[in-house]
Image (cartoon, rainbow, N blue to C red; front, side, top):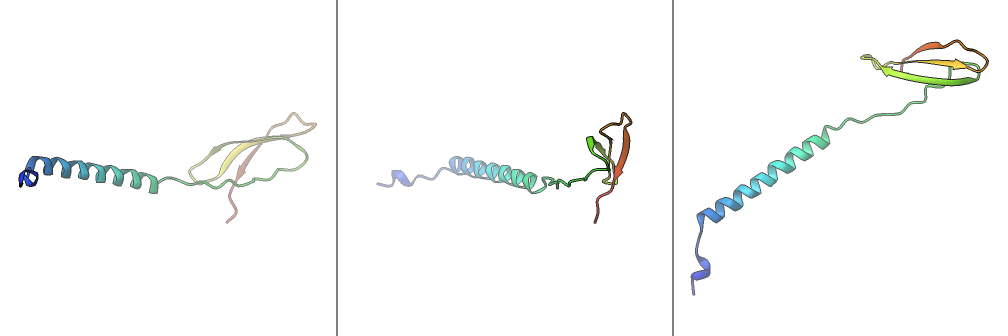
Length: 86
């Protein structure tokens, strides 16, 4: 009658270890997701004339966009440095 009530420490410890491993895994996943970076896309506009191409190339440590552009009818490339309006 009491065969089903046998207590097993090893089974209890295995289940506790599995539950702890799942908890640690979920904590690591949620921490990683909460630290994900987010970005905002900003239209830089144009630098005048009828632009044939505007090419942002890099973002410097100050958050400024660096690139080049040229307009129709010109073979001269113009460098630009754009600072976000705040």
